Image (tube, rainbow over all chains, first blue to last red; front, side, top):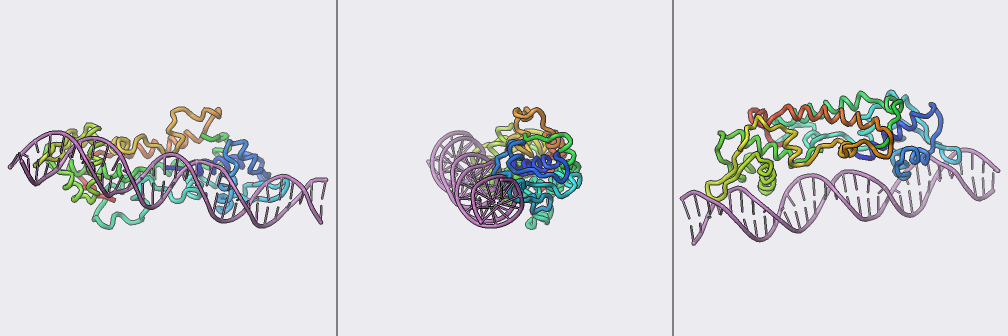
Length: 137
Length: 137
DNA sequence: TTATAAATAACTAGATTGGTTATATTATAT
DNA sequence: ATATAATATAACCAATCTAGTTATTTATAA
């Protein structure tokens, strides 16, 4: 399952993207605006920074800003940054089909189902959500 | 994520469907043929019986048999029988969008992504897998 | 009446989730 | 300079879920 943390990360990015480009927003503001636990915002911002999407300035009048075009980041990327690789079954995590059996016809079904899901998540960008005003679920 | 138990249940049904209609197979045979822990087979058969898909006869020369047309049972049904309702995010488990916010544009994305996945799982039946000789992953 | 097989129920170790808590570091307003 | 506001980093935790195991009971064919 896509975790709540990944969902929060998407919402945090959408919140940042909803402000004028280059402007700073504090983690507390994000937490308040989107009703996300403040400590979680801090934790998630660390991962978003690591991914190269945000940068922070410390001290008074500091904050976080987006350093990429929100149209260039899609939901799959954010989810995988926070949760790690996506797999709807354990089978899909190993890159080779079942070693102990000669053939696995289930794997193809899982792969197709997952790809159908991922293509939707790849189509939608942070910009799309920021425009629609994404809120928490 | 789709659990291993759900995957096992699918494979158990495919195994049953791969035998002549009406014929009996013991849980131990299923376990051996498909390399599934014998106790888990027993546990899962209870759920498959509850769903009305199999029936068992106890004692010597007993076993399990399918009591439905394997073409009538699809993967989504089996998964939901074992794992409960499918939801790629927590959001999709509540049938109403976020009460605390007026609108949630993320929900629509999750719903579409999930539906794209489910439609693949609905297309594939136990019969399809039995014909292809589905094995464990 | 005994061996065989399903049926039922309860338990468990380990991993994951959704956080919390504590502390350190840095920039700026005064 | 220095107090303060803010990011940054790390470690911890309770609750739940997963993938099983263990133990017991019931039915039936030979």
